[in-house]
Length: 180
Image (tube, rainbow, N blue to C red; front, top):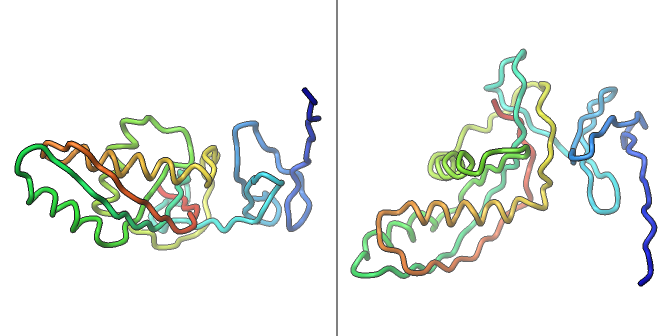
């Protein structure tokens, strides 16, 4: 078996070259010198636009979330006669939905509760000034898996006797939002 050498890549700001004081689990940062957003991808750093919510107070530490619009096409089967519940699900998924995925460590039960709540009634994403925020530790590449989890969590919450759920999820590119 051939060993592949580990290559260390220095993390310097894409715009000004300032070293990024990255911790092992972090995947995105804002340069302390020039405010350039950047994220770690397979082949190094790439620029990242970061959006800040107007609802964050200037002294508050924000929390990073990936936000992206998604479309779900769904096929549900239930035990018994639950046509109304199935048609409610079809109507719900008939329009694009905003998926909000934490970009930091989060308890899965809380994520399911809040994620489903935000699917049903999305938070306002009105832009505001930049603030300090918690480290970003969940990569944009992980958003699809978490969004699929939310679809299943929402479908599991429905008050019918679900037998089978098959769906297709199409997501737009995630954007990083800093929320309260």
